[in-house]
Length: 78
Image 1 (cartoon, helix red, strand yellow):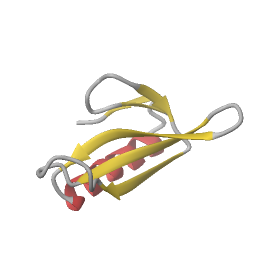
Image 2 (cartoon, rainbow, N blue to C red):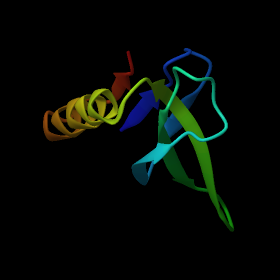
Image 3 (cartoon, one colour):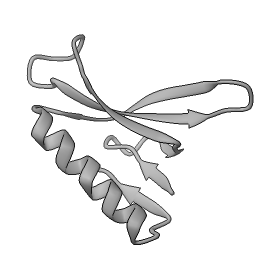
C-alpha cells in the first residue's frame, strides 16, 4: 500500500510506520508519523504527517491499519 503524505507532496510505499515525538517542530506540532521505506541498499524514513498530540497520531495510524486490512492501494493522510 502507498501513503499520500499529509501535505500532499509525497507518495510513499512503506514497510513500517512509527509515531515519534517531534522535538524540533513548532510548539503545536508535537507528534509525527514516520514512514520507513526499503530502498535499494538502505532504509529511508520520511515524516508523512504531524499532529498536535499522540492520540491524534494514533487515530491516523489506526486508519492506516484499517486501510491495509481493506486492501486499499493508496491511503491519504488527513
